[in-house]
Image 1 (cartoon, rainbow, N blue to C red):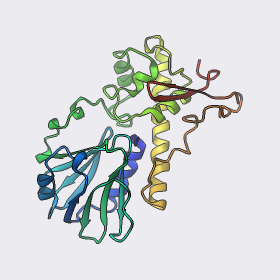
Image 2: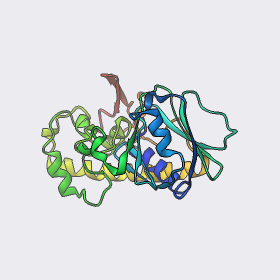
Image 3: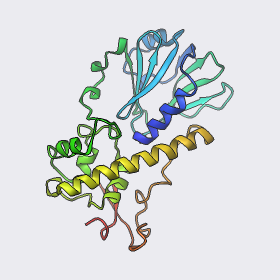
Length: 272
């Protein structure tokens, strides 16, 4: 599933290419992902012009000259192609936008779980859950003090709290593992047991892990183009169960647990 660093890199990639570019034609081949009638989607986009691309949580927000937006939540398997018309289309390509610069912007989704909204005149309240999102983890407004105050309101296992979009928007399973490892916090520890110092370490780990990942993925997308799958080889622990802990003084095998269709990877020694 694309998470905050992936979507920030997408945003940066598109903002270098499509603002001011017109949409000459729209073809919808799998309307299942659309949360708007197919004909309305085609009519609104055809002849329109892209503005800046934004992001809120796990939504990419494509602004249009008309004042409308296309809001896309890729969910587990939604991905994009930005390519020449003659390039091979991916399986389960849901729609294709033919652009005035000669390129095509395509959205494909192997599991067809993504959600594509047409937001008329910026009325984002009509998009389910968007208004309920917490602050952006890397925003200047989310200071350490503000984070600690918010964190105290949420109860449950620490990893589940970190994943709660009402606390912070955009963090998913993969980055939650690496954030908790960087903070030295056990994923199944009760959040109410964390001290103010623990919460401070969690905040700092969140900022550093996400910032570093955004920089890495943004650079790779510019060099290699849009990926079919997420870049995850820079993560230190997620999906590395059984491998040595990356902490030089530890080296013990990482633990990996699958529960409720979610994989959690951590070090039992470094994350007490």
